[in-house]
Length: 237
Image 1 (cartoon, helix red, strand yellow):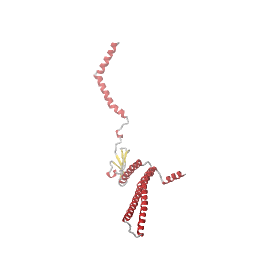
Image 2: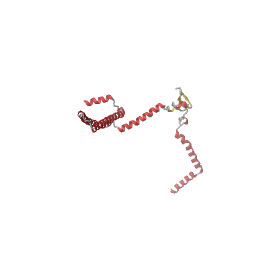
Image 3: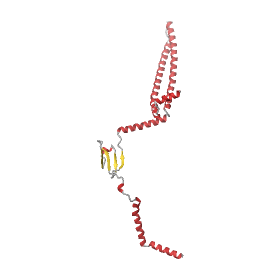
Image 4: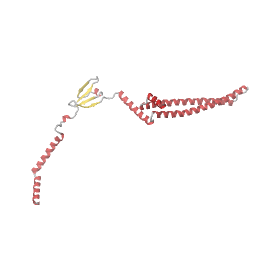
């Protein structure tokens, strides 16, 4: 039995190695090479169905819609449509942006960057108001101190003026020291008043600097005067 199996195996091996069988194998492989691509692509495969650009629908400078094999240079900026051989739309090329649109987009981008920075600085418009008020309060302290100094200097000047008046009533000359002190006090009062005026200008400048940010934050938060009035009424109840 074992002998018969080996005999069959040897015969099969001879058939496989025979020249005729090898030619059959080669022919079979070649048939697969030619048949398989068509089978894989499907029976409806047709290269003409590929969306190759064939026509262009464009707008002329006069505003008319036309079609052709090419887009005239003067019409490119208006945008155009790319069509295939069967007049099917492949894609649409948008019109070129005008200088006005480009400037508008640049302004929008600039505003967005400004808004992002503003929101990183202040959590809300109320936060900006508090920051403004803190700076104004610091200047108010300086103004209050200067006003106190002016009151003190005025009292000092009145005392010196009283001494000078007494000397005149007595028919005596006013001492040079008294006159110098009065002049010095007057100068200090003028300086203090100028200092107060400068701080008031700083306060006004701070208000002007913060107001655009506060207004912008209100816009971003959707806060209006009406809504603020309603909030104020509700809190007062």
